Image: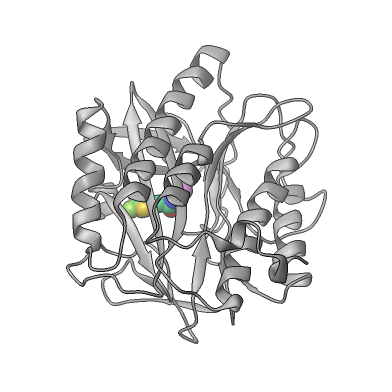
Length: 301
Ligand code: MF3
Ligand code: CO
């Protein structure tokens, strides 16, 4: 989500979602019951299954509008509602962010090409609960530089997730991601976009930046649900938004990578509600996709 400046305690932000006004009070994390967590796992898993369908068929020559239709059809067939469509006026079902597009890329009818770095971000509502996560796919040959960026960004997501436990603070998650990507690898950590709480609304408190200080921010309690989403640039961290009001690109035109998981805060180990294992299995079975970064000795750090 776009980072928002903290408003005063009285300020209430209204989001218009599916014709229903939901109220968000700044500063309040909405904790879920076990039954609600179980439902959110279903929502997150529906997104994972949808991205798995993408992983099965993605190849050079396809367009992101075709992927958009495939995703929306799959979600509807499974009784879900694509949640991005019309969210604050967003005009598509998915975000398809290719190469230097960081996030919020509009699907279009330009055929994808060998060498493209394709982040697909999808949100659904199932039984009133949101799932929202993203995965970056690689079409064909890639430079080692890009493979390493993808690998480090995915790893940074798990480093953040490790910190999503009871008693830690939001800043511990942020710090873990920034430390690994920016300090250890010299990548650009995007500041203008952040992760977020997730529940009956797509964006709930708290905001979860991918940069920050250990021990800063709100303390995490059991059953907070967070969408953690590092957006990491190969070059400069600076980005700009196109005239369409959505498409976010890197200033220097270099590629950016985005992975997102839906995570439930627990005592000793966070519970990941989304499921990359099915996406990864499909990705590895698709010879048009490059998964060499999974275990490339030359890329081991
Ligand atoms: N994962 C993104 C976010 O949390 C997706 C939002 S796309 C939008 O901001 F269209 F719904 F805004
Ligand atoms: Co999100």
